[in-house]
Image 1: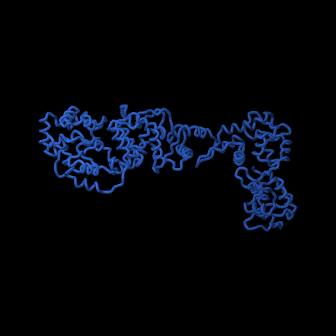
Image 2 (image 1 turned 135 degrees about the vertical axis):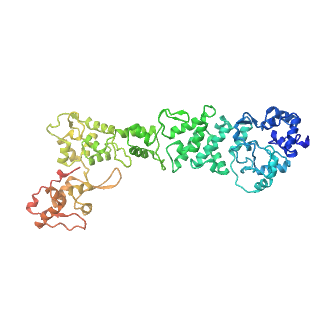
Length: 612
């Protein structure tokens, strides 16, 4: 029996049909089949890994039955095999083709001779592509010229031994083998205390491979288009994420999704190869449900699912994200406006091609936006113009408007209500035509006070005698005590007009304004802007009056007479009045003493023309 190879000592990785393979290699298929039959064993039972046949064979060969059974591949059904306590689909275990590590075989041949142990159980699994010992890719042995039986493993290896030895000598870069090492532990009945331990090894292997492909290649590559080395790298990447559970998987998928330059708006468009595999595994089997739940939760967190919508067999309990379409549907927005809102809220350095924003973050903002008022609606509600509205925000009396890139600013009605309550809290509803009081708009003309300045006085409590008509909402409904306003003006130490306003009052251009200030033809003060820390020129109403006592600008003169500047200049020229010599590009300025009597009588009431 020794010449038949049945009494050889058991070696590492020995399997039941290793002995059968030796019989075939030494004596041929027909002899081996007859011999096994003669000693009372079933050839088919050994090949299919029947436990009773393996135990009988171990006794005849003086081997440890348990040692053989650990590496025994047993057929459960036409489509399922079991090895090491793990159930595999028959397509996931290779038995008719050989996959080997050339260096392992070369070392076995040097140590044990021609019929050393060929088989490593994990080599037979379809997802094993790298040797755990050498870190090199496994070689699929090509079919030789001889028509060999599937059980004649050593005959197949002998046909290609020259190729195997050549591959063993080729230099290579060592590949990571974390997943094959995990497979070996599982097949040996051990566990690594990782999340994958709760699933069959076949499912865990598929998960790692498809997850790795999704992380490395998104939907741009398939397993068929990848080399063995690329698949090894992919499965290691997937294993690294999957072994730590759903949170690590979510983080890995989220990182890939955000770094891609061609992101879509659905899980299918982003991770198509992974999504297709998940759909195939979707069934009532409890072993698969935690995987589907993990990816369904990621989908609900990262994509736009409506409440009650199903994904991978799980129902979305509530909307967790908005895309432009879902936002437009839920809030009745135009799709362009919905896209602009989500773009503004996204805030990523690399935003998604289709913006997706968390519902609990977007919801309050969008609700506020939908209630908001456009600038002209806000002006009508407060009874002010655009310039005063901007100053109210600048002075922090009104909250800053909602800003969305590419569309008009909008003002929150709640902020407007709070502002109005603050304004009217210090006043009492009476007849605003009472003696000694004047409406804010009238006071602006009388004393050249900006509306926002008077508003600031009211809010800060500097002005206490304030009245408004019943159910008032706007500025034109408010009246102030004339004496109190006059007293406040006398106490004020802050100039009230900027260079831009001076330019508007005198009706001159920027070059002229800069020249007047630089040459000190008009006095003023330099103040530090508390909002941007810039030094600004500010001017008192008296500064403007003092300037107009000596000079007259053509623009203001024409505006007062309701003439075009050209007509006003001709009128002055007919009276022999010449402008001052100013630098080029300056507006025309005249000395008042040069004006004729008929021109001097023209009232230059600039305060009635102020629009601030």
